[in-house]
Amino acid sequence: MKKVIFLLCLGVSFLLSSCENSVEVQYPIVDPSGVLGSTDPVPNKPKPWMEGIYTVESGASVFGKQVVLKWNKNTLSIFSSKNGGYAVLQGGVLDSVFYFEGYWRFRTSTETGAVGMQISKVEGGTRLLQKDSTSGEIILRGSFGNGNQPKNTEVILKFLRPFSDFVKQTKFHILAHRGGGRNSDYLGVSENTLEILKQAEGYGANGVEIDVKLSSDGVPFIYHDNDINLRTTQKGVLWGNIEQFTWPLISAYITLKNGEKIPH
Image (cartoon, rainbow, N blue to C red; front, side, top):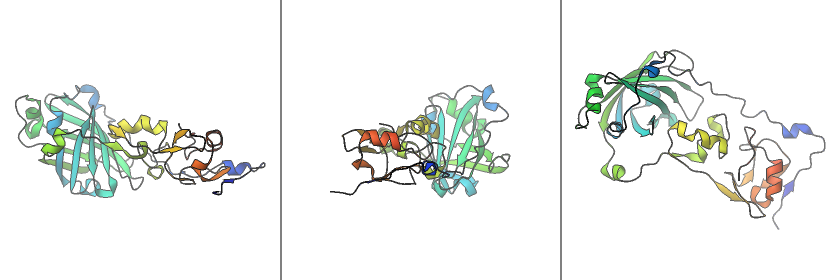
């Protein structure tokens, strides 16, 4: 029989508290000038023409050498291989100019900042709105900041090539790992929870990956690790392989890193 540890907490209330995850990401103020409020929504027609691989002509300190652009409904996502970086932007069109405002983040740290970009009329704006043309140069120009600093560093993204025919002819999914991110990403909610699932679309995802376990009395629940540990949970009275406990014990005595209960 495998050993199961159940720690009885007799008045020792500090076991139920946690000072983990004290670091909070300070997201920047996006679009402080309200430019998007004066624009029309980006039409669906040109969105696929914008998707693909872009070279980073300026702004490599955040975006690296190349990035991938992908639309998800009204959200434009930019993905970089540099520090697991990404940007999430909302867009609008005014007088054949495309405007984008949002934020960038490094997944491997708490670094973030505001970012704003434009596609001018002559660098792709007018052409993208023409329904009979998909060829030609597309350039996004703008700037980004660090933390709550103003956007004062130049960024230029130049269209390199579209996605391959194989990618375009199949379903392209951006999956949010563990529902939207890891606990170490400091997203304000715990991984594999209903709370993080609600945020996944805001990260540019159109699908999620979650992990399901089975309690000893046959109840499926969402949890990543095999054991109960301080990476995923606050200090509590249960310890050991989580699937060796019944659901009533799991639901009553385990609190996740950011204060949520385990969903099932």
